[in-house]
Length: 69
Figure 1 (spheres, rainbow, N blue to C red):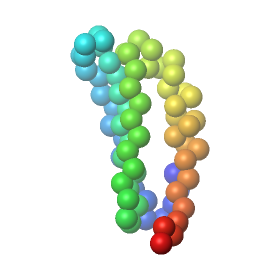
Figure 2 (figure 1 turned 90 degrees about the vertical axis):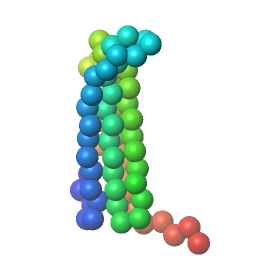
Figure 3 (figure 1 turned 180 degrees about the vertical axis):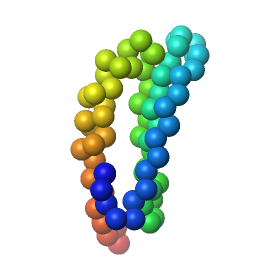
């Protein structure tokens, strides 16, 4: 994402849950006024299968100025 004054961080982690081994990708995107959080979670052995589609969806997001008032 290439927008001025927008910062992003990605956290990738694996952990145990009631469903078994789980893998998660958390992406935090901050502009001047907002914080957006995108979380993709899947069973560890399924994560890589869905990851390319999820990455394409995330890359398709665009931030623009919106006046709400």
